[in-house]
Length: 381
Image 1 (cartoon, rainbow, N blue to C red):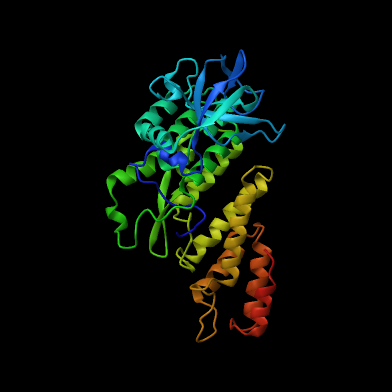
Image 2: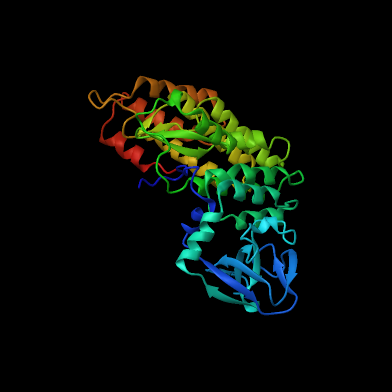
């Protein structure tokens, strides 16, 4: 299985609970062992109380309790009431949510047989899970965070539902909630195989797949001939237009500017796939953003990307070197880009470095040798 930072797509026909089981959990039957026991929206005593239960109430839950790391308490994640035809929890008016939590201190747990585990897993088709999640009430950031915790697995089908809940929060949406959604997007793709093969024509991808990706604010990114699902941050920004704080609004504007200039993914197969001038402009925009919003939560991610782009811009990459391997002369496009940079972006954070690199090349007749190589190797980004 190929591993890349942001990958893949699950087949739509996989059952929702089977997805959850793939994360390593089976089911147990819980018998309530206390009176007026609170069932909560998340695994902590400070979260919203959904309902109260008493002896005689039984539920089906994941067999691996969740640990609250703040106080060490254990909580079972309930997925359905027992004995009512095994309907999803959201169908029970007492809860109004897809998953709820109950303290392990107030229940007795009995493992289910393998056959019963399979039966329960088979009850949850995607449409049923979607209906349950869509019905969940989410009106505050805390409820949004709890809602994400209730979802069995992380795959493409769930992303539009989570996005809808995010958009339902009062504006401005807190940065932490948007962070949680983008993390959910990443997890939805992580560790999965390619969505399409190099044999597929990028312009002839199945409309159903294109629609699924668009609804999840994702796109197909190609590497080594295969295509992988990847979050489209600019599309997330469009979906949340006018609903964010100023820092996220500026971040989304930056990502949209990069997207419109085809600069989101400048490298492929160890080669630069955009013009050198475009690479330099993208670096300037990213560094300027970090300078304006140094305390923004995603600024370190933008700065790290800018540093990587700067390294390639000034020292090259395997299949896009800054000089010709045969003549050892600097590539003309690279030289012209450095000259342009010093005049077009004199106030950029990177401008002094570009000027020094250009000077080293100029003094050496624009020819690469060990001295130039040593200088380029000494650059710190």
